[in-house]
Amino acid sequence: MAEPLFHRLVLIGIGHIGSSIARALHHAPGTVERLVICDASPAHLARAKELELGDEYVADPAEAVAGADGVILCTPVGSFAAIAEGIAPHLAPGCVLSDVGSTKQSVIRDVGPHVPEGVHFVPAHPLAGTEFSGPDAGLADLFKGRWCLISLPEGADEDAVEKIESLWAALGARTARMTAAHHDRVIAIVSHLPHLIAFTICGTADDLADETREEVLQFAASGFRDFTRIAASDPVMWRDIFINNKDALLEMFARFSEDAQSMARAVRWGDTGYIEDRINRSRKIRKSLIDIKQA
Amino acid sequence: MAEPLFHRLVLIGIGHIGSSIARALHHAPGTVERLVICDASPAHLARAKELELGDEYVADPAEAVAGADGVILCTPVGSFAAIAEGIAPHLAPGCVLSDVGSTKQSVIRDVGPHVPEGVHFVPAHPLAGTEFSGPDAGLADLFKGRWCLISLPEGADEDAVEKIESLWAALGARTARMTAAHHDRVIAIVSHLPHLIAFTICGTADDLADETREEVLQFAASGFRDFTRIAASDPVMWRDIFINNKDALLEMFARFSEDAQSMARAVRWGDTGYIEDRINRSRKIRKSLIDIKQA
Ligand SMILES: NC(=O)c1ccc[n+]([C@@H]2O[C@H](COP(=O)([O-])OP(=O)(O)OC[C@H]3O[C@@H](n4cnc5c(N)ncnc54)[C@H](OP(=O)(O)O)[C@@H]3O)[C@@H](O)[C@H]2O)c1
Ligand SMILES: NC(=O)c1ccc[n+]([C@@H]2O[C@H](COP(=O)([O-])OP(=O)(O)OC[C@H]3O[C@@H](n4cnc5c(N)ncnc54)[C@H](OP(=O)(O)O)[C@@H]3O)[C@@H](O)[C@H]2O)c1
Image (cartoon, rainbow over all chains, first blue to last red; front, side, top):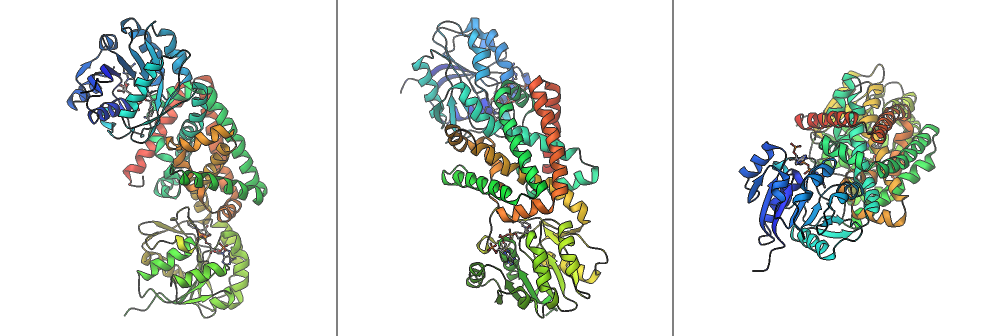
C-alpha cells in the first residue's frame, strides 16, 4: 500500500466544512492514517463521535495537534488567531498547517506570525459549501469537481504545498494557486458581496408593513426566493468573513452601489437605452457561465 | 359537454407566457373553443403555427379580435397602450379583455381609457415565468400551483372577473385579488428589485479587470451564480417593467440601498452586533419560506 499523505491529520472545527472533509476522507481510504477531530463545542464533538467521523476526538486543540503531521483549521476565520497562538508551541517540526477559511489575507495576517520555525503554513479555501452548518451538514461529495484555492505566504515550502494539493485532489477538488490579495478580491465579488446583498434584501423585506411582508413570503417565487437561499447562512461565520475581508468587500460594494444608483437613475428618468444596455450585458455574463458550464 | 369558458380567445403575443397559456390550454380541453394567436413578429407567428399552438394565426391584432369573447395581452407592458388603442374599435360588446403584464397600475392607466363601453377589462398577472423568452420557451405546466394576481379597475364586471379566474384555475393557477397599487409594491420587492440587483451585479463583475472577470466566471458557484439566472431575462420586457413600475421600484430600491449602506458601514466599523443581527433576521425570513413551502 502507498504511504498515506498524513499519518495524523487534525481537523480543528467539525462543522459543515470540517465534517465534509472527514466524510470525503472515508471515501479516499489510505489518504490519512489517523484522523483526529477537535471542536470547542462538546455537543459537536460528541455528535462527530456518534457519526464516527474520525479515529480520535479531542476537545483541547493543543492536545489534539501533538504529534500531528497535518492540521487544518475549520472554524470561523475570526477564531484563527487565538487557535494558532494556542497550538503553536505544540506543533511538531515538519507539520503542515492549513485552513479552509473564506478569507486569505486575514488568515496570513492572523496565523502567519504564530507559525513556529519548521512548521509549514499552507492557507487554502475550498469553494464549496451550502447554507447549512454543524457536523450533521457535512457532505462526502461537497468538494467533488469544485475548486480549492491555495494562497501562499512568502517562502512557502513546495513539498508541503503539494501535500495539501494532493489532499484536496483526494477529496475530489481541483486546486489553483492565487495570491491572497487577488483571492480576496475575486471572492469578494463572487461570494461575499452576494451574501451581503442577500442578507440585506431579506431585512428590507422584513421591515415592510405586516401585510406586505406576508405577501412577500407568499409570492417569493418570483425572484426573491433565489436570493434567500444563501441568506440562511451562519451569522458567526459570515460576521467573521465580512470583518476579515473588509477592504475588498467594501470596494466591491462601492462599485456595485454606484452601478445600482445609475440603474435607478435611468429608471427614474426613463433612460431606456441605458437599461437595455445593462440588461444585455448581464445576459452575456449569464451566457458565459452557461458556456463554461458554471451556470 | 359543458359550455366552454370562451368561444374565441385571442392571445396577443405568443412568447414565453402566451405560448405557455396555449400549451396549458391543450391540457384543459373544452376550456376554449377556438384559440387565436396573434404576434407582431412574423417569425414567432410562423413558429407558433409549426408548434400547432392554436387554431388560427393572425398577424393583425384588429383582425384577430373581431368576434372574440376573450382577449389576453401577452406582450411587454410598454406595448399595451398602442395595442389597446388599435384593437378597441374592433372589440365586440361583452368581450373580456385581460392581460398578463407584470405591472398593474400602468396597465390600468394605459389600457383602461381605451376600453369601449360594454367590454370588460380584467387585469391579471400570473406569478410564473422563467428567464427564457419566445414561443419555444413556453411550458404547459408553468402556471401549475402558482399564483395569478387579479387587480381590478373600478366598476369591474363580476361575471367577467370570475371568467378570468376560472380560466387561470383551468391553467392550474390559484388566483387572488389585490389592488393594483398594492400589487405593484409587493411585486417590486419580490421580483422587480431582485432583477434590478441581478442585472447590476453582473455589470459590476463585467467591469472588473480582465483577469478578475475570468475568475468571476470560473468561481461563480460560490454565490454569484444564484444571482445570474434571473439576469438572463429579456431586455425589452424588463425595460418596460422597470419604467412602468418606477415609483414602487424606486421606493423599494431606496429602502434596500439604505439598508445595504448601513450593513457596509457596520462592516467598515466592525459593528459585529449589527451584522449578526441582520444575518439572524434574514435567516428567519428564509426559514419562514421553508415553513410555508415557498423555498
Ligand atoms: N460554509 C461554507 O459555505 C464555507 C465554504 C468554504 C469555506 N468556509 C470556511 O470554513 C470554515 C468553517 O465553516 P463551516 O461552514 O464549516 O462552519 P460551521 O458549520 O459553523 O462549523 C464550525 C465549527 O467550528 C466550531 N468552532 C467555532 N469556534 C471554535 C474554536 N475557537 N475552536 C474550536 N472549534 C470552534 C464550531 O462550534 P460552534 O458552532 O459551537 O461555535 C463548529 O463546530 C469558516 O472559516 C468558513 O469561512 C465555509
Ligand atoms: N417572463 C416572465 O417571467 C413573465 C412572468 C409574468 C408575466 N410576464 C409578462 O408577460 C408579458 C410577456 O412576457 P414574455 O416573457 O412572454 O415575453 P416574450 O417571450 O418576449 O414574448 C412577447 C411576445 O410578444 C411579441 N410582441 C412584442 N410587441 C408586440 C406588439 N406590439 N404586438 C404584438 N406582439 C408583440 C414579441 O415579439 P418580438 O419578440 O418580435 O418583439 C413576442 O413574441 C410581459 O408583459 C411580461 O411583463 C412575464
